[in-house]
Length: 100
Image (cartoon, rainbow, N blue to C red; front, side):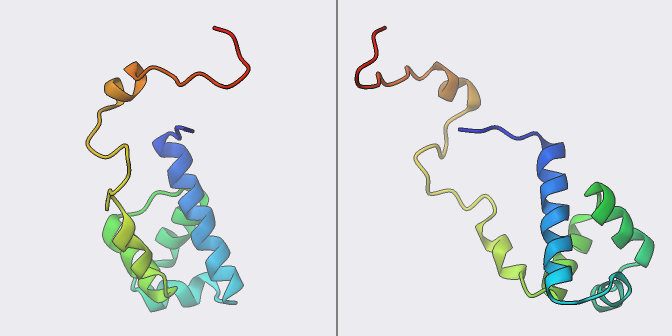
């Protein structure tokens, strides 16, 4: 399991949005107008990943990926409901061919 920091995730999300915008041949100005946010806010988001949640959702709507947010915190994994402390205390499974 790879743990990412909030900063890592914020920047990755900003890069994904920028990539999606570019793949659709949409300028920053066009996307700002479509999403109802200022051009400066959009530029800041793409550079730093900082944006209000409402603005992020409006960007997702304008880029046709709002449905991706349905999966955020949806759960249904084997790790659901366990704290980080519980996960760290779980004994590791032995790998075949390795001595303790």
